Amino acid sequence: MRTVQRIRKHAPRLLLTLTVFMALSLSMFAPVVSADTTSYTALQIHDWLVDQISSATVVMTDATTVILNSGDYGVDPESNYVRVDGVGLNVLGVSIGLSPIKFMFEPGTTNVLIRAELDLLGISPAPKLECTATVACVGPGGPLEVTSIAGVKIGSFEPTLSNDDLNAIVDVLNQIIVASGLSVTPPSASLTGISIVNDAGTDKVQLSWSEGDPTYLESADILAKVNSMVGTLETKATSFLQAGEGDWNIYVDVVSGTSLDIGASLTAFGVTAEVDIPIVFSVLTATITNATFAIGDDAPKTGTFSAEALVGCSNYIPFVTMQSFALGGAHSNLNAYVAQIEETILTAIDDAFDDIVAYTALDWPYYSISDIAVVGTNVVLTSSGTESLDIRLLPGWSMVSVPVVPDDPAPTAVFAGAAAVYTWDPQAKSYVVPLAVVPEQGYWVYVTSDRTIQVTGAPVTEWQSQLLQGWNMVGSIYADSVLVQNLSDNPVNSIVRNAVYRWDPVLKSYIASTAVEPGKGYWMTTVRDCTLSMP
Image (cartoon, rainbow, N blue to C red; front, top):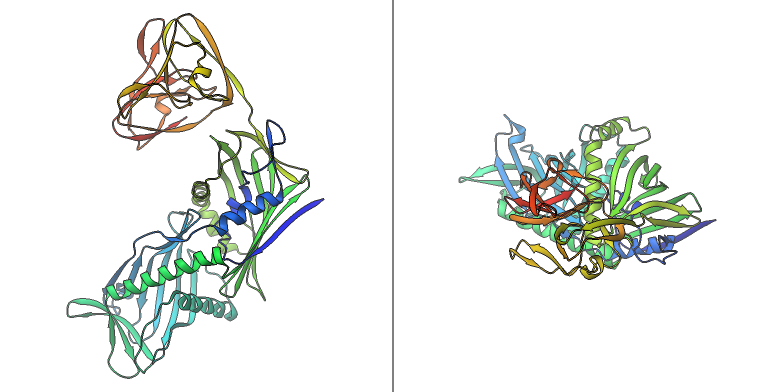
């Protein structure tokens, strides 16, 4: 049996950028099957994806700058250029842009060598794009347009493009120029040349025409045009997502007992792109094998890719750790380039997934999970379950922590029978009565007689906490001790590692510690505000 849910909306689509997100994101709104599992239908996953994409806002990410340089083209062609920095958009928490973009002009012609760095998924170093274009502008009032393009390169990859392919790229570029509102007001003549010149001590863009005097643009003029263009694109892209000026389609299939299939198609500026991604889950590993993508209509460019990722959640927040990513097919040069930067791509996808999760406020119903599986025609999450931890309290004060998420986090429930419970407020630099018990915090607990308390809840094997400069009381993680020397702080070297102390309730004194043990609380001091990651 195959469950298929489809919808057609009108909006553009960030296909490749959001592939992993679509493949691994599950709706938080689902019926509970039992205390330990939650089931999701294709329709629920589908509707959640559609809602998130259609409610997204596209925003400009950086302040734009324009630099002109009137170097000697004859001596160094790259010294005569317009450089534009900070052109980027943010969609669903993911930044996409071209920055910097360098336009190098051959004096006396309308040829321009374009070099740019692609800001996509935070890949660093950014892939470099290059092409040579010819531009035109016919007056009076004629639009600025690209008439031809050649020499397309992506990093070390030079795609084989037919004349039809190149003409399609030219057409898309011109549609973007028209949509952006970018224009130059020419005289009653045709554009014959573009160059960067120094006019009275100021570098300017000189536009030469078939008749009449040249016209000049200063950096401020170009910046105003670029900002107007980016602002227009920003508005139109948001409208595409929300109001229906493009055409996109998402489908979600759950193949009974086998896989979760997610696909999407986009038609924008007359070009259609499609992707189809089958995901097979094995415990917490998600495997994508021979996913397909295609760009174009009559003779589309096609390809395949495969990937593997570990999927989980911590503190109810899902995460992805990419293990591999590779292209398939016959594009050997592109495959070699992707393989060369695979580690960078894996890290970038992890970071982009985190950004999207934060943007969408996605969470899952369990603190942590032990399995994701296709069961029948549903995708099922299984909780990692609960564990019990015994904490011994001797008469008097004990400094402890609770590395599980208790069903009832109230201090009176967790430390039942205690005469007093306090924690440290590093901002106020005073003790306070806590409202809830959390794993990353240390607690002073006072009892009048020897007792052992048992705390049951979802085990916490990692956490992050913000520490303030000075002394902080911190907690532990479940099951494992963590060496102080292996603690991760950001900025690094913020924690004073030879000043970590625990309280010995037998000796009634502090003891310097070399490890953070489960169930114990610790004093740590920092030289600056920082983030502590445990383990």
